[in-house]
Image (cartoon, rainbow, N blue to C red; front, side):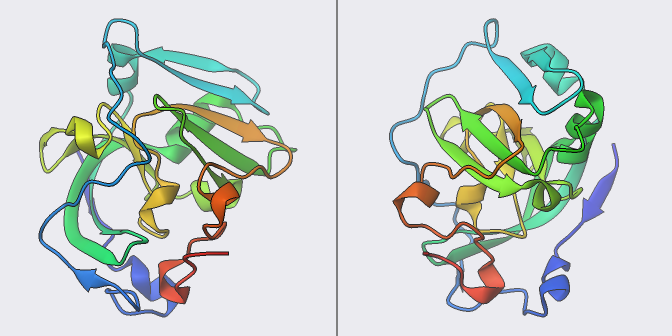
Length: 198
């Protein structure tokens, strides 16, 4: 399996590796809007819907059989901590988008999760190889409290843009805000500009 180091991504944003207002931690704090949802690998399903040529549905085995890669990424939480050199393994966003065939009128993406959480990003912010649907962290199955079985990681954004327990992606023809974005968090979430709240 290929391994890619994207920890120099900050250079694209003319920023230092540790974004302003962040502190580096070796721990991996747990933050979520509510408790950890239950899941059953026999009934779990991941869907790709909306402005696509082919709507898709994957079982757990089908999803984890997708072409995968391991990336070393930095992880920035909006609450002010960053964890460097996380190794995440999973399928890239462009891989799923290509399989579904994104329509020309798609401009935005809404992620949904097992606990009812949603978050949004413009399509062009998702069509990056660093946006991963990850099911392994540091070579082990992604822990439940960190979003297992699958979470999205978005190293170019604060981590609330990466839904834990993700179970669906909807391609939209008009922007729509997610759970925290409706509650005053930044819609753009660029750590190097400290875009924490709107």
